[in-house]
Image 1 (cartoon, rainbow over the protein chains, first blue to last red):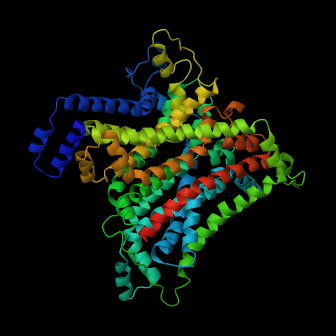
Image 2: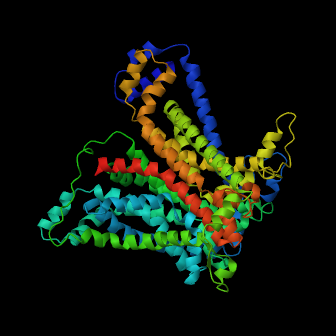
Image 3: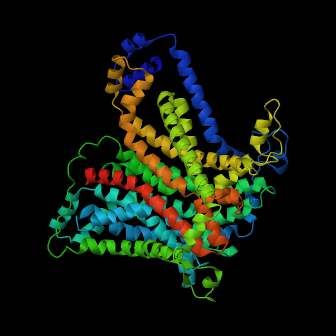
Length: 303
Length: 330
């Protein structure tokens, strides 16, 4: 009770209400210890949540001698970047980076173009079958290509696209398309129809209005969506594992997995590798963080 | 998994919450003028083609081979495929492994979902109550956990529980009277699954906690005050005032978690070096090991079909919820 009252005070203060009266009213002897306790629990949760990430980076910076200390060194005392160099020198690292980029970028570009058109249709038209199309998008999003790896493998094998970057790019296109459509739909319907109508009154064609008015306005949405899609492609493991068999065709998550299977040999190198794989995703999250504040929520809240 | 989480998170954050101003009104759409009636169909044709080609056709093909004998000889074309009716299904369902696999899958999914949703809700409530000096670092820590690619998480958790130099064994070893040095966590499948569940829950909590936290800020403050004046205790306030407001978000998050955790393959597979033994077979792992590793594509397909049917049942609920929100929107 007292601590909730303390929350009230916080809220009231944020809303610019004079809180002195409330505060004196709720001050009880139990308030301080409970508040402290809650914050201590919060700090505990923070440590549990941050520890795996911290341990990955800390280990990546340690020397091999350090990790065999009988008492773990919680702070790397002799930080070194040599593990990263060693990870990058591992065979096929740069091949893997290049493959992931080629597959991810081509899938994302294709899925943005195709998805933008579909998003226009859903957000700007009512047509027979619209609802069915929406249901299909949601169902496909729920049951991803993950459960279809057997037929995808067999079918791509038939047309000799297994162990080809093109085959993986095609499946990743299908993997990213549903939520690309879903997110872009939100951005497009966030733009007032009146803008297009004005353009059309001024002599712009319907498609012209789409490309001259909507496209520039959803640009932040396109960036955010493409980052989401790229992260998904970068992280994907299962289909890549099934489809890409030869070493030089493997993507970055498969490259790291090769490392994992050598468990027990080179932990510092593995942690450096994990950090390298996670790095672009973290950077994208940070970029996206701003988008969430501006474009994403703005687009989404309006439906 | 993580990127689609975000997309869903975006929906979630906006979905269960109070309608934003102007959201309740029917959205205007351009009325198709003459000659443009076919335009929306032209716009969705490319998407339809991709989805039918890369989801629809393979899905049909999956069902087809689940009724066929399709092993390695058929893959290489040295023997023709043979229709064998329900034989694959019968073989899978009457096999010794079937019941344990189903129980294992359900227990694994339940553990992941209950822990994710329960801890996520507790952390969301905690975040409301802690000072921003603690909350902001916590949010940043959660963003990092959220951003961690599954395969990196597998490597990190494998390192945390490593039997020789893992920090977890060292920590448990510090307890008086416990000897945990050289303890291998993957010999006993229950312990092995605990590690995998912990890893999945750790990665899933940020999405759930942040979503719930956003939903909690929508609970009208006057209602809480009124309930308290009427003498409601802490638990009664939560149950009767707070929970009803965040309920739609909790339901969607729970359904999504069930669907995701039900089909976990990568984390189990990679944590066990790509060769999980039968003690680690869940439905999707069985399907993978039978088909891709074992070469019995028909049998693996039958298991996959059973899995997909289960998923469709589970997601039905979710789809209804999302469509209801759509109706309000558009």
